[in-house]
Length: 328
Ligand code: ADP
Ligand code: MG
Image 1 (cartoon, rainbow, N blue to C red):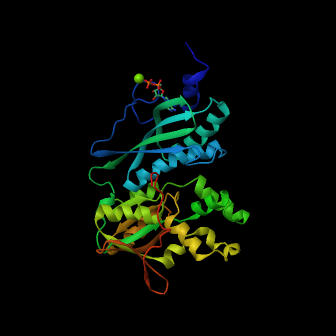
Image 2: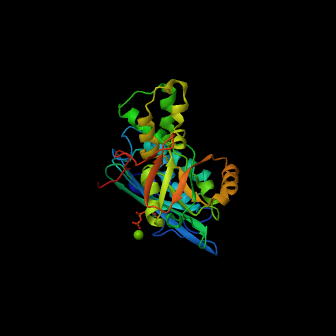
Image 3: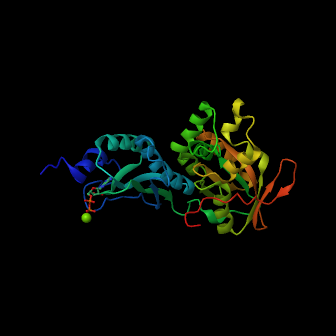
């Protein structure tokens, strides 16, 4: 019987596409994956809930992009190559227009990374999206949080803090010039997962993490897992807020720049550490995937995180520098 309404019709119309690599995709009780010999599967889930992770009126196409992007970002942090993903989604009603736009954004990013949708679950309920991604990484070569070494350089990709700046503007905490807002808003709503950079850093970086909750907090995870400390150069981190480069943003307070770059979430850049002897290799890896990287500090033996001011003074992180934490 061909169903034209309800759950199964929605799935068939918007989420079922032939798979190229996976032996079995949407339509059976399980999908099947066939990792290549010598590869380990890298697996990660991320959930987006309306009013917590996105505004109710966000364009569904952007939401489709972001729901997958935040998951691909986890694969990037591990140096894994995307293979496939599943999509569990709750939505208040079965709107074809909504699903059309959502799947358009989702599949545009999926196709760009050759990552296929192989299954999921669809239910009625308050809008929430949970994607699980599967990637592959050569045996033993995944980048981990736990392998940072004393003396390593600390690097980040791209820019930091623009997503937070846009979020604050959308929450009407401040006003941004229209051009600045639209650029920053794109960073918030359409993050770029650094998938190629993550893979290019295998064998070069000692440790890596993706920045979803803010630099200080996420780098803090590397420090704890690796039992080391760090010092960051404020002069460099301050230069990473792209919005601040705009001529109309000269009046931006340094404290706001620091809040956005050090504790702003939703950047989905990579933070990684590598030995100073790997500097040329890091820059070459970054260049090979046209992703800028900046050296922002050093791993140290002394536990904790310190900030060096442009004048050379060592500062303790201010109290506002805590990153997002759901149950705190
Ligand atoms: P089951 O009841 O056996 O778990 P479902 O009836 O929930 O299966 O789903 C039917 C098929 O559709 C399965 O192959 C499932 O993986 C797939 N599926 C369900 N929802 C989605 C979705 N949102 N995106 C992709 N595939 C989905
Ligand atoms: Mg079943």
